Image (cartoon, rainbow, N blue to C red; front, side, top):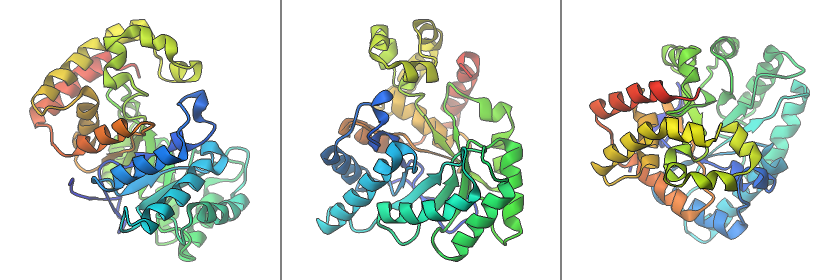
Length: 324
């Protein structure tokens, strides 16, 4: 089992890898294949019994369907004694075209869907809202003091926005614990934009979503570039998936494959391991799983540790071929 990590400066200790559950929402056929309830239960069962102790979701994932699936299936797993306790739950409020006055009601509905008395990590999904960040933070601080949520995080915030959120929380005797951002070996923009450095300086954890660049870093598209033709347009555009980019990133996949041979690991597992070890304990990651085999692969990505030489090799080559 991987050693648990402290989330920010909180009392919450999490496995380096969590499970992202966007794909459990019923609207995700646009990007991912739909995952039915029985498969959701099997994925959760395997993940939670093999070293993962937290799940990430959001109210916008399937308009609450992902949260409802999680609440239902976690309850079932506990009832069937397939797991002994509920995992830590992270979810989000979507602020676009909404005011801070909607947060309280959203949390109440999310608590019902997740079938829990308190949410372990509550995150502002992105920085654009009708209300000021100050107003949003005030509501969240009130909810925390009411014990409806336990920790406050953000998502997709720039370094400046993240620092501001942390400073605003200090006025309530609180600290920002996390910022969920897109980060992987082919997307290094949080380093260039100062997010990573600011997080390290302030003791804020970064939660990396899209840690495999929507399948790019598995190597399967490099093995068979024609598979790109089966990928939906939103996913293709979002990850800049093209045969040209496949060829330009091939050296990185080959290095992942070569390093993986030292540990009997796949390129995907090495890519995830790099994320959770390249910056000490600062970065956690939330790979998703729409198949049981993917859940099995994910948990095995945190049972080894790359050497510093291997981390440096991947870092150097990644910077040469990164798409962002």
